[in-house]
Length: 173
Image 1 (cartoon, rainbow, N blue to C red):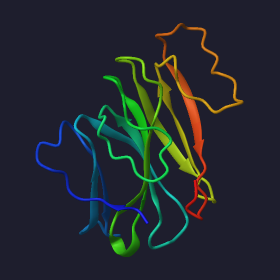
Image 2 (image 1 turned 60 degrees about the vertical axis):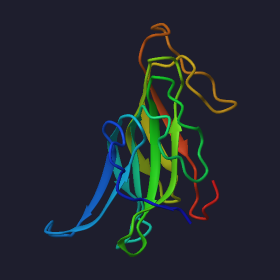
Image 3 (image 1 turned 45 degrees about the vertical axis):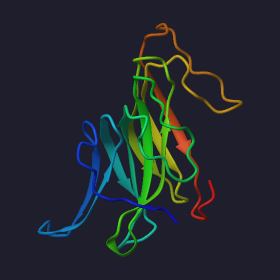
């Protein structure tokens, strides 16, 4: 399953994220996908898994300021940045060289103009994504049973985060 990604509409907002797959020699474009909402997005990291030599899954993380950023699949959080920014994480499959959005979610605390950013991403052999980033939000969401992050610099300081998103190859997250 998933959602086919298409080129953006005219006047889709500020900057959007794109992912392009080039041929091995770089001479031709095999596919191109856009993701974005009404405001600005920025991709900060990309990683491929080892599920297939010819069609590996593509994982992205970055920043969105758009309440209309596309959320698909089992999303952890809706994209409601409330004038700040949220980190986003997305997985794309590419059956037959056609990009397909498997899941996309936003993540972070919402504190007015303060922001969250996904800065790096890795994927384990089971397809779970691990994201690291930064947040200024004092209400950054954490898992039940995990202590709140230790922050000695006050509510407006920047803190790092690491999150794991388990989504086994079965497709059930």
